[in-house]
Image (cartoon, rainbow, N blue to C red; front, side, top):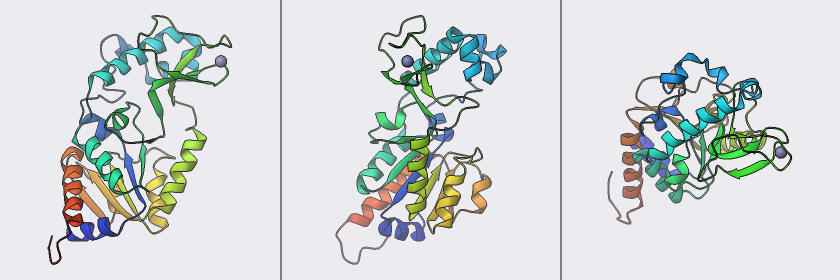
Length: 252
Ligand SMILES: [Zn+2]
C-alpha cells in the first residue's frame, strides 16, 4: 500500500465506501444483462425491470427476480465484502453506500449499508408502497398480495424509477462529510449515484478508486489502486491493522 494512503487511513474519521457491480462480480454474480440467458434473453431489460413491465406481466417480473435472488443466495461474500466489514468496525463513523442489490454486504457483517438501488431480499407493495418485509423463505409460485389487495414487488429500483429519497439523502450527507471516500468496483457513470464521489471530492475528501481497469473517475481520484477488490481491500485492511500496532518507531 502506498505510504500516502496509509497516512490517510490513520487520519481518517469519516470514511465512505462506495461499491458497485465489480464487487458482486467477484462473488460470481452476473450483471443484469449477463444474467439474461436462456428464456430471459428475448426480453429487453425494461421488460423485466420497470413499473410498466410489472403492470403488464407481474408474473414474468416476479419469476425473473425469484431466479435472480436464488442466484444471489447461492453466492457467497468475497474477501472484499469481508474486508469492508472489518474496516467499518475500525471506523464507527464510516458509511457503506452500495449500488448492489444482492445483500452480500449484510451477509459479510456490514451494518445498515445504504442500498441505493434497494435489495432483492425485501418486498414492497406495488399499489400502496408499504414495506412488505422479507422475501418469504418459501416464496409462493404466484405473485403475493398486500393486505390492501395490491401485488407485492421486489424492493429494488427499476428502470424509470427514482432512487429511494431518504437513502439518497443520507448517502449525499455522508459523502459531503467524508474525509476519505473509497470507490470500489464501480464505473460511477450512472447518475445520481455517480455524483457522490464528486460531491465528496468537492468538499475536500481524499478520493481513492479501486478498480481492475481505469474508469472515468480515475482522472479525478487522488489515488487509483488497479486490481481486484478482493485483493486490494484485504491488503488495505491489513495495512490499517499494522498502523494500529502500538510499537513506537515501527515503520510501514
Ligand atoms: Zn398495499
